[in-house]
Length: 131
Image (cartoon, rainbow, N blue to C red; front, side, top):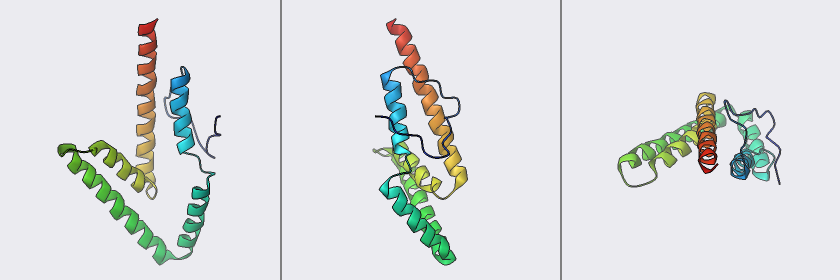
């Protein structure tokens, strides 16, 4: 079962076409994670509308998101030299920051397109070796 792309979605920059069920599975999984028609997204939209109606509350929310996002990134940086999932924490923190800052969102979108290009190249090379 495929899910429709989110409203306003554009294809990933430089993404190669899907080559086989595994690539389609990855693309479908990413698309499912980006869906915006879920109950949680509707609840968050209502919360965002309430926050936007009170400027002081909006500022407080933005400060909290910034502190949490930067803290998660800082923990991720520390985990690069300590045992733990450093890169995962860094990308999680960037995802948190991307909810409030468009520049960070663009950075994560570019990174996602880069990962998809690498994934497709790896799949093509693997398929060529098998053939």
